[in-house]
Length: 93
Image (cartoon, rainbow, N blue to C red; front, side, top):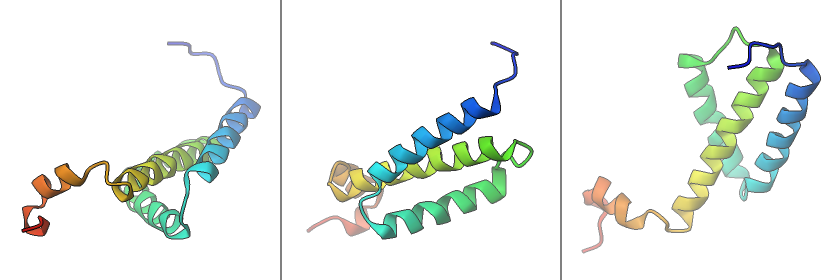
């Protein structure tokens, strides 16, 4: 592990790349709102509040991106069989 400090500009660059990825992943404005709510819930109970703002922003946007990708997979039906297994009460007859 490298203990060298990471220049703030480098963290800001990473954040910009994740932000661009996030923008490309969000297909529906409701996804953005749902991701924001999920991250707020997660962050309030666990978040790394002691981190510099740029690092917090990077982490929040990375989590939002993953959440939106997962929502897209669910909407595309990639987990239909698993959903029926996890929640049998909604399985088709």
